[in-house]
Image 1 (cartoon, rainbow, N blue to C red):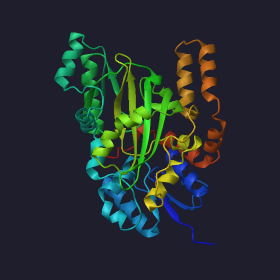
Image 2 (cartoon, rainbow, N blue to C red; image 1 turned 180 degrees about the vertical axis):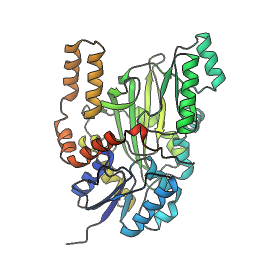
Image 3 (tube, rainbow, N blue to C red; image 1 turned 90 degrees about the vertical axis):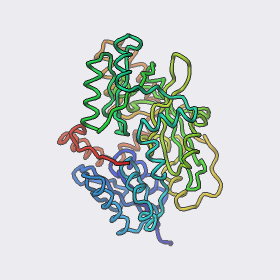
Image 4 (tube, rainbow, N blue to C red; image 1 turned 120 degrees about the vertical axis):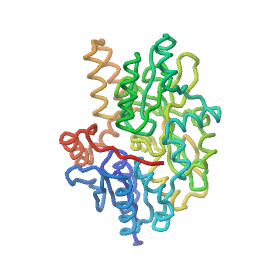
Length: 393
Protein backbone atom coordinates (compact mmCIF):
# COMPACT_ATOMS: atom_id res chain seq x y z
CA UNK A 1 0.00 0.00 0.00
CA UNK A 2 1.35 3.44 -0.93
CA UNK A 3 1.88 6.29 1.51
CA UNK A 4 -1.25 8.39 2.00
CA UNK A 5 -0.88 11.94 0.84
CA UNK A 6 -1.58 14.65 3.37
CA UNK A 7 -3.68 17.81 3.05
CA UNK A 8 -3.77 20.65 5.58
CA UNK A 9 -7.18 22.37 5.58
CA UNK A 10 -7.95 25.64 7.34
CA UNK A 11 -11.29 26.70 8.87
CA UNK A 12 -11.50 23.03 9.76
CA UNK A 13 -14.46 23.34 12.14
CA UNK A 14 -16.47 25.77 9.99
CA UNK A 15 -19.07 24.30 7.63
CA UNK A 16 -17.00 25.08 4.53
CA UNK A 17 -13.89 23.49 6.03
CA UNK A 18 -15.82 20.44 7.19
CA UNK A 19 -17.12 19.94 3.65
CA UNK A 20 -13.53 19.95 2.39
CA UNK A 21 -12.44 17.55 5.14
CA UNK A 22 -15.19 15.06 4.27
CA UNK A 23 -14.42 15.28 0.56
CA UNK A 24 -10.67 14.71 0.86
CA UNK A 25 -10.86 12.05 3.55
CA UNK A 26 -13.30 10.13 1.35
CA UNK A 27 -10.80 10.43 -1.52
CA UNK A 28 -8.13 8.74 0.60
CA UNK A 29 -6.09 11.71 1.81
CA UNK A 30 -4.84 12.08 5.35
CA UNK A 31 -6.40 15.34 6.56
CA UNK A 32 -5.00 17.70 9.17
CA UNK A 33 -7.19 20.66 10.12
CA UNK A 34 -6.59 24.05 11.69
CA UNK A 35 -8.92 26.84 12.76
CA UNK A 36 -8.90 30.06 14.77
CA UNK A 37 -12.30 29.20 16.23
CA UNK A 38 -12.37 27.64 19.68
CA UNK A 39 -15.24 25.14 19.77
CA UNK A 40 -14.11 23.43 22.99
CA UNK A 41 -11.38 21.37 21.37
CA UNK A 42 -13.64 19.30 19.12
CA UNK A 43 -12.71 18.39 15.55
CA UNK A 44 -14.11 16.53 12.58
CA UNK A 45 -14.17 12.78 13.01
CA UNK A 46 -12.61 12.59 9.53
CA UNK A 47 -9.51 14.61 10.51
CA UNK A 48 -6.39 12.85 11.74
CA UNK A 49 -5.36 15.87 13.83
CA UNK A 50 -6.60 19.38 14.56
CA UNK A 51 -4.71 22.51 15.62
CA UNK A 52 -5.78 25.81 17.14
CA UNK A 53 -4.60 28.96 15.35
CA UNK A 54 -4.40 32.37 17.07
CA UNK A 55 -7.31 34.71 16.43
CA UNK A 56 -5.31 37.89 17.01
CA UNK A 57 -3.28 39.83 14.48
CA UNK A 58 -2.71 38.97 10.84
CA UNK A 59 0.98 38.44 11.54
CA UNK A 60 0.36 36.01 14.42
CA UNK A 61 -2.15 34.01 12.43
CA UNK A 62 0.06 33.83 9.34
CA UNK A 63 3.17 32.87 11.30
CA UNK A 64 1.28 30.11 13.11
CA UNK A 65 -0.14 28.69 9.87
CA UNK A 66 3.28 28.77 8.21
CA UNK A 67 4.83 27.01 11.21
CA UNK A 68 2.12 24.35 11.02
CA UNK A 69 2.77 23.83 7.32
CA UNK A 70 6.50 23.49 7.97
CA UNK A 71 5.84 21.00 10.74
CA UNK A 72 3.56 18.69 8.76
CA UNK A 73 4.97 19.27 5.25
CA UNK A 74 1.59 18.46 3.68
CA UNK A 75 1.38 17.64 -0.01
CA UNK A 76 -1.18 20.45 -0.33
CA UNK A 77 -2.36 23.34 1.83
CA UNK A 78 -6.00 24.13 1.04
CA UNK A 79 -6.82 27.53 2.57
CA UNK A 80 -10.56 27.80 3.21
CA UNK A 81 -11.76 31.23 4.35
CA UNK A 82 -10.56 34.79 3.77
CA UNK A 83 -7.89 35.05 6.45
CA UNK A 84 -6.13 31.77 5.55
CA UNK A 85 -6.14 32.68 1.84
CA UNK A 86 -4.60 36.05 2.65
CA UNK A 87 -2.05 34.41 4.93
CA UNK A 88 -0.83 32.29 2.01
CA UNK A 89 -1.05 35.21 -0.42
CA UNK A 90 0.99 37.50 1.82
CA UNK A 91 3.86 35.02 2.26
CA UNK A 92 3.37 32.99 -0.87
CA UNK A 93 6.98 32.08 -1.57
CA UNK A 94 7.52 30.72 1.94
CA UNK A 95 4.38 28.59 1.80
CA UNK A 96 5.15 27.43 -1.75
CA UNK A 97 8.60 26.27 -0.62
CA UNK A 98 6.89 24.04 1.94
CA UNK A 99 3.77 22.71 0.23
CA UNK A 100 1.68 23.00 -2.93
CA UNK A 101 -0.65 26.02 -2.91
CA UNK A 102 -2.88 27.64 -5.52
CA UNK A 103 -3.96 31.17 -4.58
CA UNK A 104 -4.27 34.54 -6.36
CA UNK A 105 -1.48 37.09 -6.37
CA UNK A 106 -1.49 39.77 -3.69
CA UNK A 107 -2.61 42.42 -6.21
CA UNK A 108 -5.40 40.17 -7.48
CA UNK A 109 -6.56 39.42 -3.92
CA UNK A 110 -6.72 43.15 -3.16
CA UNK A 111 -8.70 43.88 -6.34
CA UNK A 112 -11.49 41.64 -5.02
CA UNK A 113 -11.16 42.08 -1.26
CA UNK A 114 -11.29 45.90 -1.23
CA UNK A 115 -14.82 46.58 -2.41
CA UNK A 116 -14.24 50.09 -3.76
CA UNK A 117 -11.36 48.72 -5.85
CA UNK A 118 -13.53 45.82 -6.98
CA UNK A 119 -16.35 48.10 -8.15
CA UNK A 120 -13.89 50.35 -9.96
CA UNK A 121 -12.40 47.32 -11.73
CA UNK A 122 -15.84 46.08 -12.77
CA UNK A 123 -16.80 49.47 -14.20
CA UNK A 124 -13.51 49.73 -16.10
CA UNK A 125 -14.05 46.26 -17.59
CA UNK A 126 -17.68 46.90 -18.53
CA UNK A 127 -19.07 44.50 -15.91
CA UNK A 128 -22.36 45.93 -14.54
CA UNK A 129 -22.27 46.86 -10.85
CA UNK A 130 -23.95 49.36 -8.46
CA UNK A 131 -23.01 53.03 -8.48
CA UNK A 132 -20.66 54.10 -5.68
CA UNK A 133 -21.17 57.50 -4.03
CA UNK A 134 -19.02 59.78 -1.88
CA UNK A 135 -20.72 60.87 1.39
CA UNK A 136 -21.70 64.34 0.13
CA UNK A 137 -23.39 62.94 -2.98
CA UNK A 138 -25.13 60.26 -0.91
CA UNK A 139 -26.55 62.86 1.46
CA UNK A 140 -27.79 64.93 -1.47
CA UNK A 141 -29.53 61.92 -3.02
CA UNK A 142 -31.39 61.17 0.21
CA UNK A 143 -32.27 64.80 0.90
CA UNK A 144 -33.62 65.39 -2.61
CA UNK A 145 -35.60 62.17 -2.69
CA UNK A 146 -33.77 60.94 -5.80
CA UNK A 147 -33.42 57.65 -3.98
CA UNK A 148 -35.27 56.21 -1.02
CA UNK A 149 -32.50 53.84 0.05
CA UNK A 150 -28.73 53.40 -0.03
CA UNK A 151 -26.39 50.63 1.07
CA UNK A 152 -23.52 51.33 3.46
CA UNK A 153 -21.06 48.49 4.09
CA UNK A 154 -17.43 47.85 5.00
CA UNK A 155 -14.97 48.49 2.19
CA UNK A 156 -13.56 44.99 2.80
CA UNK A 157 -14.84 41.43 2.73
CA UNK A 158 -16.19 41.20 6.28
CA UNK A 159 -18.29 38.13 5.43
CA UNK A 160 -21.86 37.03 6.21
CA UNK A 161 -23.33 40.51 5.54
CA UNK A 162 -21.46 41.75 8.61
CA UNK A 163 -21.69 45.54 8.92
CA UNK A 164 -24.12 46.03 6.01
CA UNK A 165 -26.67 48.84 6.53
CA UNK A 166 -29.69 49.84 4.44
CA UNK A 167 -30.28 53.53 5.11
CA UNK A 168 -33.23 55.77 4.22
CA UNK A 169 -32.35 59.05 5.97
CA UNK A 170 -29.35 61.32 6.32
CA UNK A 171 -29.15 60.50 10.03
CA UNK A 172 -29.12 56.77 9.30
CA UNK A 173 -26.45 57.38 6.67
CA UNK A 174 -24.18 59.16 9.14
CA UNK A 175 -24.67 56.50 11.80
CA UNK A 176 -23.93 53.69 9.32
CA UNK A 177 -20.74 55.38 8.09
CA UNK A 178 -19.58 55.87 11.67
CA UNK A 179 -20.33 52.24 12.54
CA UNK A 180 -18.46 50.82 9.53
CA UNK A 181 -15.52 53.15 10.07
CA UNK A 182 -15.29 52.29 13.77
CA UNK A 183 -15.61 48.53 13.31
CA UNK A 184 -13.92 47.93 9.95
CA UNK A 185 -11.79 50.99 9.28
CA UNK A 186 -13.73 52.28 6.26
CA UNK A 187 -17.16 52.50 4.66
CA UNK A 188 -18.47 52.16 1.11
CA UNK A 189 -21.74 53.80 0.01
CA UNK A 190 -23.55 52.15 -2.88
CA UNK A 191 -26.71 52.40 -4.91
CA UNK A 192 -29.45 50.07 -3.66
CA UNK A 193 -30.44 47.47 -6.25
CA UNK A 194 -34.13 46.59 -5.76
CA UNK A 195 -35.26 42.98 -5.68
CA UNK A 196 -35.90 40.17 -3.22
CA UNK A 197 -33.81 37.10 -2.35
CA UNK A 198 -34.59 35.32 -5.63
CA UNK A 199 -32.90 38.18 -7.50
CA UNK A 200 -29.60 37.16 -5.88
CA UNK A 201 -27.31 34.86 -7.88
CA UNK A 202 -23.88 33.45 -7.13
CA UNK A 203 -21.04 32.23 -9.32
CA UNK A 204 -18.25 30.10 -7.85
CA UNK A 205 -15.14 29.79 -10.03
CA UNK A 206 -12.01 27.67 -9.62
CA UNK A 207 -8.87 28.38 -11.64
CA UNK A 208 -5.79 26.25 -12.24
CA UNK A 209 -2.28 27.52 -11.36
CA UNK A 210 -1.83 28.55 -15.01
CA UNK A 211 -5.05 30.62 -14.94
CA UNK A 212 -7.27 28.21 -16.87
CA UNK A 213 -10.88 27.98 -15.70
CA UNK A 214 -11.34 24.54 -14.13
CA UNK A 215 -14.87 24.72 -12.70
CA UNK A 216 -17.92 26.96 -12.42
CA UNK A 217 -20.92 26.54 -10.12
CA UNK A 218 -23.93 28.86 -10.17
CA UNK A 219 -26.88 29.20 -7.81
CA UNK A 220 -30.00 31.26 -7.24
CA UNK A 221 -31.02 32.23 -3.72
CA UNK A 222 -34.47 31.33 -2.45
CA UNK A 223 -34.15 32.70 1.09
CA UNK A 224 -31.43 34.70 2.81
CA UNK A 225 -30.55 35.88 6.28
CA UNK A 226 -30.75 38.72 7.14
CA UNK A 227 -33.76 39.02 4.80
CA UNK A 228 -32.70 42.44 3.44
CA UNK A 229 -29.49 40.95 2.11
CA UNK A 230 -27.22 38.31 3.52
CA UNK A 231 -26.16 34.68 3.51
CA UNK A 232 -28.07 31.96 1.64
CA UNK A 233 -30.64 30.30 3.89
CA UNK A 234 -32.01 28.35 0.92
CA UNK A 235 -30.86 28.22 -2.68
CA UNK A 236 -31.07 26.24 -5.88
CA UNK A 237 -28.29 25.10 -8.23
CA UNK A 238 -28.40 26.45 -11.79
CA UNK A 239 -26.47 26.21 -15.05
CA UNK A 240 -26.09 29.94 -15.72
CA UNK A 241 -23.25 30.11 -18.23
CA UNK A 242 -24.11 33.72 -19.05
CA UNK A 243 -23.37 34.89 -15.50
CA UNK A 244 -20.06 33.05 -15.41
CA UNK A 245 -18.99 34.46 -18.76
CA UNK A 246 -20.03 37.99 -17.73
CA UNK A 247 -17.58 38.09 -14.81
CA UNK A 248 -14.65 36.29 -16.44
CA UNK A 249 -12.98 39.52 -17.69
CA UNK A 250 -12.16 40.42 -14.07
CA UNK A 251 -10.39 37.11 -13.48
CA UNK A 252 -8.63 37.10 -16.82
CA UNK A 253 -7.20 40.55 -16.16
CA UNK A 254 -5.77 39.42 -12.84
CA UNK A 255 -4.61 35.99 -14.08
CA UNK A 256 -6.55 34.50 -11.19
CA UNK A 257 -5.45 31.32 -9.44
CA UNK A 258 -7.55 29.32 -7.01
CA UNK A 259 -11.14 29.95 -5.94
CA UNK A 260 -13.45 32.95 -5.97
CA UNK A 261 -17.14 33.63 -5.38
CA UNK A 262 -19.12 36.35 -7.15
CA UNK A 263 -22.45 37.64 -5.84
CA UNK A 264 -24.77 39.34 -8.32
CA UNK A 265 -28.25 40.82 -8.16
CA UNK A 266 -30.80 41.07 -10.97
CA UNK A 267 -31.83 44.73 -11.15
CA UNK A 268 -35.61 44.77 -11.61
CA UNK A 269 -35.39 48.24 -13.19
CA UNK A 270 -33.37 47.25 -16.24
CA UNK A 271 -33.15 43.44 -16.15
CA UNK A 272 -29.34 43.47 -15.79
CA UNK A 273 -27.37 41.30 -13.36
CA UNK A 274 -25.00 43.50 -11.37
CA UNK A 275 -21.97 42.40 -9.36
CA UNK A 276 -22.48 43.09 -5.66
CA UNK A 277 -19.12 41.72 -4.55
CA UNK A 278 -16.31 39.35 -5.44
CA UNK A 279 -14.91 37.25 -2.60
CA UNK A 280 -11.36 35.86 -3.06
CA UNK A 281 -12.15 32.50 -1.49
CA UNK A 282 -14.41 29.47 -1.55
CA UNK A 283 -17.98 30.12 -0.33
CA UNK A 284 -19.48 28.66 2.82
CA UNK A 285 -21.73 26.29 0.83
CA UNK A 286 -18.94 24.04 -0.51
CA UNK A 287 -20.91 20.96 0.54
CA UNK A 288 -23.76 22.01 -1.76
CA UNK A 289 -21.57 21.91 -4.88
CA UNK A 290 -20.35 18.41 -3.96
CA UNK A 291 -23.95 17.33 -3.31
CA UNK A 292 -24.76 18.43 -6.87
CA UNK A 293 -21.85 16.41 -8.27
CA UNK A 294 -19.05 18.99 -8.36
CA UNK A 295 -16.36 18.16 -5.80
CA UNK A 296 -14.60 21.52 -5.60
CA UNK A 297 -12.21 20.71 -2.70
CA UNK A 298 -10.94 17.54 -4.40
CA UNK A 299 -10.53 19.32 -7.73
CA UNK A 300 -8.71 22.20 -5.98
CA UNK A 301 -6.22 19.76 -4.42
CA UNK A 302 -5.68 17.95 -7.71
CA UNK A 303 -5.04 21.27 -9.45
CA UNK A 304 -2.50 22.28 -6.80
CA UNK A 305 -0.75 18.92 -7.27
CA UNK A 306 -0.68 19.39 -11.05
CA UNK A 307 -2.73 16.25 -11.60
CA UNK A 308 -5.29 17.81 -13.96
CA UNK A 309 -4.06 18.01 -17.54
CA UNK A 310 -7.38 18.57 -19.32
CA UNK A 311 -10.02 20.69 -17.61
CA UNK A 312 -13.22 18.77 -16.77
CA UNK A 313 -16.39 19.82 -18.64
CA UNK A 314 -18.07 22.89 -17.20
CA UNK A 315 -21.54 22.68 -15.65
CA UNK A 316 -21.44 18.88 -15.47
CA UNK A 317 -23.40 18.86 -12.21
CA UNK A 318 -27.07 18.63 -11.31
CA UNK A 319 -29.15 21.77 -11.79
CA UNK A 320 -32.37 22.40 -9.89
CA UNK A 321 -31.08 20.83 -6.66
CA UNK A 322 -32.00 22.54 -3.39
CA UNK A 323 -29.77 23.61 -0.50
CA UNK A 324 -30.60 24.90 2.96
CA UNK A 325 -28.49 26.17 5.84
CA UNK A 326 -30.49 24.72 8.76
CA UNK A 327 -30.02 27.49 11.32
CA UNK A 328 -30.50 30.33 8.85
CA UNK A 329 -33.45 28.58 7.19
CA UNK A 330 -35.27 28.27 10.52
CA UNK A 331 -34.55 31.93 11.30
CA UNK A 332 -35.83 33.09 7.91
CA UNK A 333 -39.01 31.02 8.06
CA UNK A 334 -39.70 32.06 11.67
CA UNK A 335 -39.25 35.70 10.74
CA UNK A 336 -41.79 35.38 7.90
CA UNK A 337 -44.30 33.83 10.25
CA UNK A 338 -43.74 36.51 12.91
CA UNK A 339 -44.19 39.24 10.30
CA UNK A 340 -47.77 38.11 9.73
CA UNK A 341 -47.30 36.37 6.38
CA UNK A 342 -49.86 33.74 5.41
CA UNK A 343 -48.74 30.77 7.51
CA UNK A 344 -49.96 28.14 5.05
CA UNK A 345 -48.21 29.83 2.14
CA UNK A 346 -44.95 30.19 4.11
CA UNK A 347 -44.97 26.58 5.24
CA UNK A 348 -45.93 25.33 1.79
CA UNK A 349 -43.04 27.24 0.19
CA UNK A 350 -40.67 26.10 2.93
CA UNK A 351 -41.62 22.49 2.29
CA UNK A 352 -40.89 22.91 -1.42
CA UNK A 353 -37.47 24.36 -0.60
CA UNK A 354 -36.72 21.41 1.69
CA UNK A 355 -37.38 18.85 -1.03
CA UNK A 356 -34.32 16.78 -1.85
CA UNK A 357 -32.15 18.23 0.93
CA UNK A 358 -32.26 15.11 3.12
CA UNK A 359 -28.92 13.63 1.98
CA UNK A 360 -27.24 17.02 2.29
CA UNK A 361 -28.56 17.50 5.83
CA UNK A 362 -27.56 13.95 6.66
CA UNK A 363 -23.98 14.71 5.62
CA UNK A 364 -23.97 17.89 7.72
CA UNK A 365 -25.26 16.17 10.84
CA UNK A 366 -23.14 13.08 10.25
CA UNK A 367 -20.18 14.89 11.83
CA UNK A 368 -21.97 16.66 14.69
CA UNK A 369 -19.28 17.57 17.21
CA UNK A 370 -17.89 20.63 15.35
CA UNK A 371 -21.44 21.96 14.89
CA UNK A 372 -22.19 21.53 18.60
CA UNK A 373 -18.85 23.09 19.49
CA UNK A 374 -19.50 26.14 17.29
CA UNK A 375 -22.96 26.58 18.81
CA UNK A 376 -21.63 26.47 22.37
CA UNK A 377 -18.70 28.75 21.50
CA UNK A 378 -21.08 31.31 19.99
CA UNK A 379 -23.19 31.24 23.15
CA UNK A 380 -20.09 32.02 25.20
CA UNK A 381 -18.77 34.67 22.77
CA UNK A 382 -21.27 35.82 20.11
CA UNK A 383 -19.69 36.33 16.65
CA UNK A 384 -20.36 40.08 16.79
CA UNK A 385 -18.28 40.28 19.95
CA UNK A 386 -15.34 38.30 18.61
CA UNK A 387 -12.19 40.20 17.57
CA UNK A 388 -12.08 41.43 13.98
CA UNK A 389 -9.34 39.96 11.85
CA UNK A 390 -7.81 42.92 10.03
CA UNK A 391 -5.99 42.59 6.73
CA UNK A 392 -3.67 45.28 5.42
CA UNK A 393 -3.64 44.98 1.64
